[in-house]
Image (cartoon, rainbow, N blue to C red; front, side, top):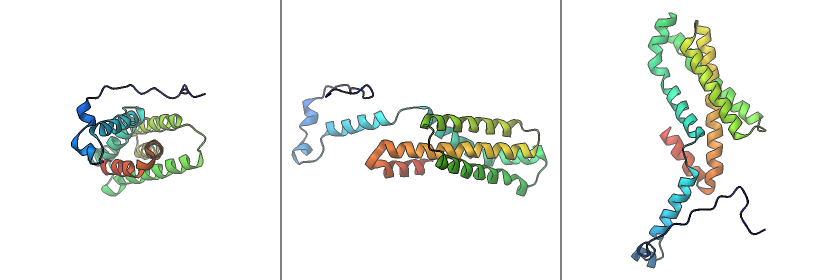
Length: 178
């Protein structure tokens, strides 16, 4: 069959001004303004607000909250500076566990990974916020870290698949803004 499959969406046709197609630069062999708009449209189709973008923002936000929370954790649980740093160690141990888990279990769909990671983020954050004792805080940080690792690696893979040849540039941009 020569038609579109059910998974492909028809791109909306847009009316362009003739001025855009016949710019002086177009005569020199460079890209026309209309071509730049087409590229921007394709990029806009790839980058939309979606749950994975929200999860990535949550990951960055939660990670940045550890620093300001340290004085409160020390006073609430009566621990010293060295012990309070264990929360970061627990988080990053959890993140490495999440990345390893993702690498060993590739049968799950992206949506399942992102939902699982988001659930672990929420459960870990709740455990940290409402922990009755210091060991519960550490366990919550480890759980939050597992969700962090799963989400970060899955979103990186999705971006790499979605941008094809431009994947390296997009992943560098993501790393620079994270």
